[in-house]
Length: 249
Image (cartoon, one colour):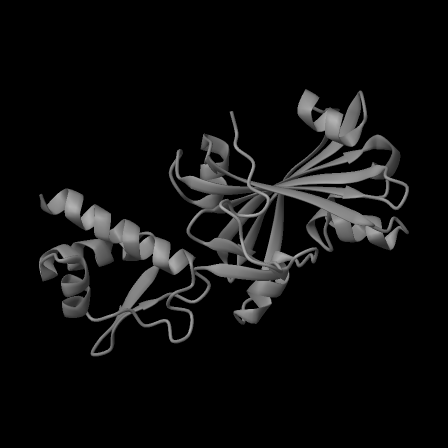
């Protein structure tokens, strides 16, 4: 029984970390308090905490108990209709966000990407991993139509980044359409995120449009599910379903 119980406690704590429940001080409850909360033994609590420590989520200070490691979870609070980058949330945590390009090539866009970009034939594809304080935050795959891709070099894709390079070239972004879905890490994504294949991943797809409606770029961010969250503020009382939720058949 201990195995399933400690896994369940670890899952509960992992979710609370992702939701930012410990953001104010970073301190977790004592092992005794956690045992009472989850109705398990202290041995079970310790095994759960050690599992989270092995995942890089928590650490222990002698005489001070367990705490959430800095840069473990990031959140963005958005008013309805606003747009904010992950860099802002990472900066708020006092960490730097760096980007390492792992792939840069011109290739045929897959059908779903080609349809969104309204293009056929080749497009620029950039894959990068972003690190927050040296720890993997997300894997980014970006596509740029051939008509806009030429100014974006591999060095530009790394810094200042694809979208910022396009902006500096005079391509202003008028609208960003964003969709969010839960998925699982593939082998290639898992290696870059330093996790296991099948781990929960938050997929955020963003399509950038110019003022005339022309698609400028498409990005797909795959965040570790327990390291990033998106908070949205909207006016008026909620209905029976959260705003914007679309069932996937």
